[in-house]
Length: 236
Image (cartoon, rainbow, N blue to C red; front, side):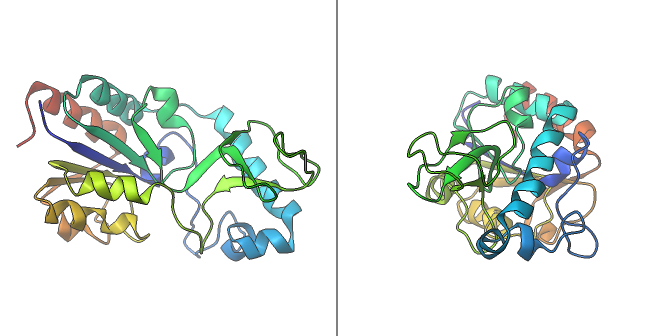
């Protein structure tokens, strides 16, 4: 295998491990308005509420485990002989716990923090954050926030991701709604580069028509089967 592969994962893959998706049918996040808990303005207005929301999400990670889809993608990465990049919209650490290494978090990570005072980011943080938390770098108290990309903020690693998409031979999207941009546009970039494209989802996404191949079903069942087939031969 010598293909360049880019994989995008969304909330659907983590949901099968028991992590609820952020959005519900009413467009609220766990009963909260996203403006209140997922925006710089919401954090400035009530940091305690925002910290409480993400502390609950962070604590929930200890109660779930990678599922068969996460494990299959880690196995695929280990065996893939060409360029490989896993991009996830998820802020959990299930891919890492499954063994994925060549990956980027588009929307940040629950287990990291960033200081609004000195600007340092990527601080490993596994316990609760609060207004009494102190930045280990500048020693400022109350300046730490979750390393999460909130509404109105720029997703992480876009230059590196678009560079890989522009040279991809294969693009696979798993468990995404096709609603959130720029991730929803990745398939179009990959197609323009001549990549073969696959989608795995429970139902059609908003961008299903842009994919050449589609597999409908739970990621924990479909992805291991797809990976097994790919490891037998180069996708065609």
